Amino acid sequence: MFFSRSTAAAVLAAGLPVAFAQTYTSCNPTEKACPSDAGLAVSNFNSDFTKGSSANASWTAAAYSFINYGPKGAEFTIAKADQAPTVATDFYILFGRVDVTMQAAEGQGIISSIVLESDDLDEIDWEFLGGNYTTVETNFFGKGNTTTYDRAIYYPVTNPQTQMHTYTVDWTPQSLSFLIDGQNIRTIPYSDHMTVYGKNYPQTPMRLKLGNWAGGAAGEPEGTVEWAGGPTDFSKAPFTMYVQSVSITNYMPAESYTYGDMTGDWQSIKLSNGTGSSSSSSSSSSSSSSASASDSSASASATDSSSDSTTPSVSIPTSSLGVGNAIQSGSIVTSTQVGNYTPSATSGLKTTGTTKATGTAAAYTGAASVNQVAAAGSFIGMAFSLFMML
Image (cartoon, rainbow, N blue to C red; front, side):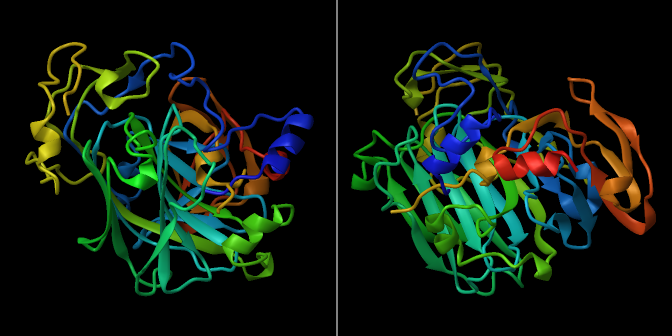
């Protein structure tokens, strides 16, 4: 995920809120005591976005993210500059398998992203360049370490912007694997030299973020624009990323995860009240069977998490517009309107500060379904501040 220190400095100088995937966290548990992370207390979680807003349970959205629904599922559309529709789970997992069936957005400079991210800046990424029709980037970070950028590796994939594929992260204490349509393309062992022999191996509770952003937008650093494939021509908008479904298997279910010390070591994480059953956010019934893990040693090495506070035994810059950098609104994506969204016609959009959006929206016409997310937070970066004012 791209980062620009010059952009960070500019944003801070402007007095705007800022969050960067590799350099910012609201509370870093390796530096001070932090609140516990809300966990996924069941083994399995599924969202079928082809069923519309019924799949939104347990997802939150970045401010001013408007998600449409159609036969391909959730639609993350960039219609103009400064938009970056982003959603995230409202729970964390500790080791697990994440399957996302999606179609990346087309467009030079457009980046579709699947990101797992933790409070102490461990991170696992899939990133799709809108003008690259043959490969996808896999990447990871440990404890926000950006001293080197040799971990990003591209792998072949057939027409990611025109075909649905299932992209998988299988994450265990022993190894991190990336799969495309069930085929393993990359495995990083815990003790690999790229992890600095375990020191920078992602190993703390993470939540999943999905989003679409413009790395080629005006004002982005030259290195970011170059990496993204060049400047984005917004006259060719909209640029839409489609997410059909998400399936998550949590290898260490718990109601909450608490850092037991400041080491950032997975063995220091305390688990509370895991149930081991299944959950689904779609209207279809959820399977009660547990999805199989590609590395069975992960579950074998974990202690029983059903008891309270158990310890488990088991050269690229980054952008301020990236998916990992959007402040979440704190509101569950719940309100669905029928019609075509007209941004200038909205009124009364706000949040109660808890989990329920309030307010009304006007000028919805037609038959398309659009999901309306109220804003309690704000997008990050100077460009996002302009979007907030619309």
